[in-house]
Image 1: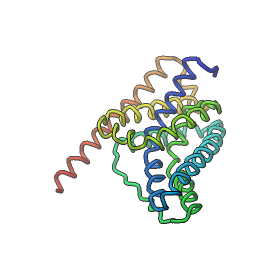
Image 2: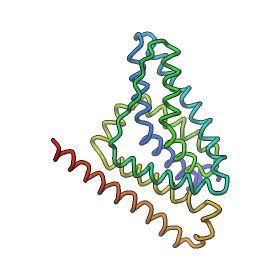
Image 3: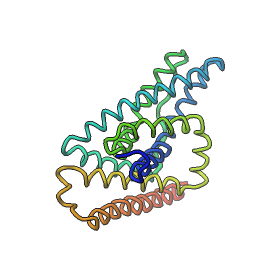
Image 4: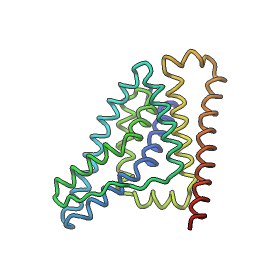
Length: 227
């Protein structure tokens, strides 16, 4: 995949959007951990925690990119990513990580561990969107993670003001998942024409968005009814 081609730029945009939509909890966690420390150490923890998280994320994503080259794993990863896209729309989970470390390196360790545990969906999404291109992974992560960490409040407020952003992110995830599934060695023979490929992509995206919208609406109604 050559740099500055439409395919490269589209994949890069997908990675950035995936990171922005899925990394909000990680940004909140870093802020939460930093609050437990003296003000003099807060900026250092944020910087070390952020760049440490970037390094860990890049390493794990590069490993995931290689793993997805094994026959059958693209199919598994794609199906999992479809579920992640659907789950994103429900928006019912709360961050259950409660950092209690008050030491400097304890806080950094908490951030790195939580980033690994909370970033599985992000890693799979980015690995799928990268199509095996390591440069895409590195550029996408280095652009998006600092934006999320230092602008997390803005990102969260934008999502609250414009819920459509969540649907756009979920749609991109579902679209990425459909491409992963179709590229798997066991599935590729069934998609020999552009029409069949486009139809499958449309079906996956539409199914995720429609199902997520209906389920989200029902959950909201149930909440109102129990109040």
